[in-house]
Amino acid sequence: MKERSIVRTSLTMATALVISLSTLTYASAESELLSSGTAQTENTAVVCTSHRFGTGIVTKAATTTSEGERTYTCTECGAVTTTATPKLIDITAAQITGVSAKYTYNGKIYKPMLTVTLDGKELTLGRDYILSYGANKNPGTGYVTVTGNGRYGGTLKKTFIIVPAKGVISKLTSTKASTATIKFKKKTGATGYRIAYSTNKSFKAGTVKYVTVKANKLSTTIKKLKAGKTYYFKVQAYKTISGKKYYGKFSAVKKIKIKQSASQLKAAKQKIVCDYAKANVGGAYVWCGSSFRATDCSGLTMQCFEQIGIYLPHNAAAQASYGKAVSYSDMQPGDLIICCGGGHAALYVGDGYFVHATNPGRGIVMDPVSQLQYYGIDTIRRLI
Image 1 (cartoon, rainbow, N blue to C red):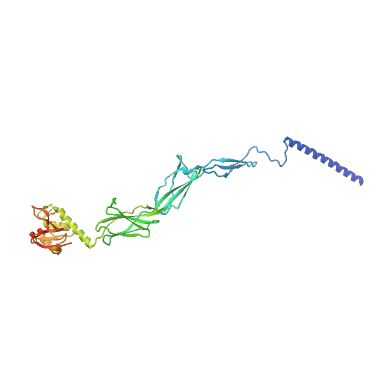
Image 2: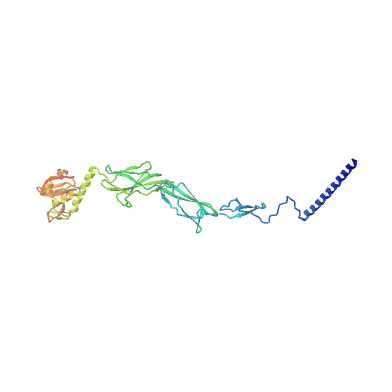
């Protein structure tokens, strides 16, 4: 038993000696390799002879004022490299066309397709820039924003005005003397309405007057108009933006004859009759005539009253039965004078004068009423 134990021990020591020598030899060899730079172990990184970086990622975005950075990582060895990217081209200096300064409300959203040009080059939508729009529907300020894309940066905003829709007159009346009432339709987004009126159908400069009403009023009455005259009206809506009024289109023009009071109507008729009589002065006396400036006495008075729709017979004595009798002291312009025993007719034109067709020698003249004493007044008739 003791011998076996010794032998096992001896073998054990011998084996240990061999292992120790072997370890020393390996350590010495490794030391040599390390000193010569050729040592390799299982944990040493493999040298990459062909990097694969791919497209990389943006680690700093370029702007119009500074360069950007893109970082690449090798998929083989993990090596990292960074490159600079150029500044973006500033789009704010571009020219924009295709956008009107003013649009008219139509219930739809305005999205104008514009053209963007920079340094003489037309840029491409989607590649070089993108567009975004405001609400761009109701009257007010609309806009489109151009934002640089790809190689371009910065934003450029183009604004425009949306004005109310074209005005519409719904009713135009003159029920009271010297006034007119105009009604018009409501327009979306309007701040108020402006009415233009004139006695000239072409609204010639200097003849036009304006009335402005707020948005909550859709009618107004205009006073102090000339009774019996024809007036022309049109209306437009407006939108106030930053203190300035922007007008929509005028409505179609409508006209109306302004109502006259009883006294105004009478005065107007008197003027028409008297003016016609005066216009004949200097004309010829023509027996049985009834033409302008060529007529006899009853033919003249007959023509005068025809101007206002009163039709008399071509006979002085027969005319004496028309209208009502008035006194000489109450005589007014437009009164019919029958004299010479019913054989002569004349017209009082005011200011102490009357017009009549006398005879072939004198023709149609205007004489002072004092001369009526030579003719002998039979009756003075008021037809107006």
